Image (tube, rainbow, N blue to C red):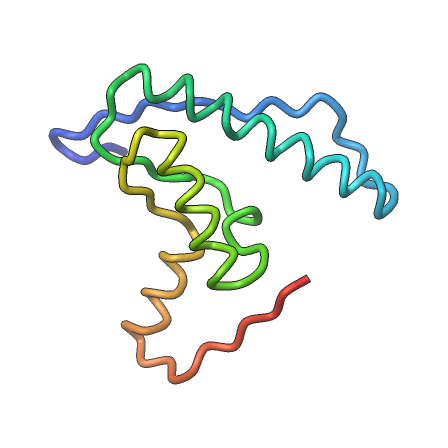
Length: 108
């Protein structure tokens, strides 16, 4: 499945320790993700893309709308100013298109 004229260039986030058996283990997982995201962005921008689409979900939803804005800016900064799309923004747009009134945000 591709869009004519668009080529995907993918970089993966390497997680070394995926244990999720405690709150501390989950926090460790998040720390790994945050470090590895920057490496993944550095690798994918070598293809000189025009736009960055983050094909991940959870990290783009942390801390609600403000957290997503912060995340998007961080990725854009790492990617040399590229515009960035996230799953959280896509969900917000879809809800608005389907007439959802106020959108409640639950933060961890």
